[in-house]
Image (cartoon, rainbow, N blue to C red; front, side, top):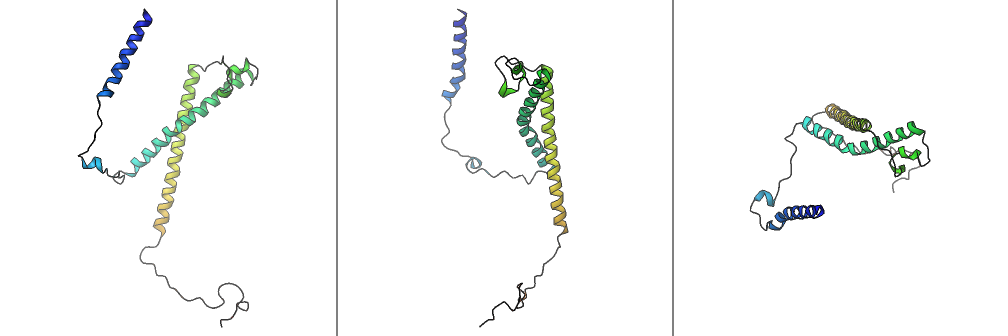
Length: 177
């Protein structure tokens, strides 16, 4: 009878979750001018430090899945080497990293999981700071280059090229008819 109670609870939850979907109607017309023609989001009103902070955040959180995967693989490999020196037998592969693990693989301890998480987060933050430093250096170089340009009007004098100054021997150039 316990299975019937679980089934009834599941059925009631499904009905309750799906009921609002059937009652929702699609909107056919819009009267709001902003909804019809949304304006392009303009970032000119934000200070540069806010844009840099947003970029830092995107790099840090965006790189975290990749650093977590690499750190977990490195931690599993270290455990495998420490436990039995990369033993390829069935019992030795219980500590192997993910693609090589067997069915009876031994999971990491909570301390190892915490260490993996801390190392992965630290690498992500380090990557974000490295990106921030590189962007700051590029911005500073561009600012110095722009400030070193001459101000005012640039005068360009065009003069006709003298004959034979095109590089090469003037004796080899054919004479004009």
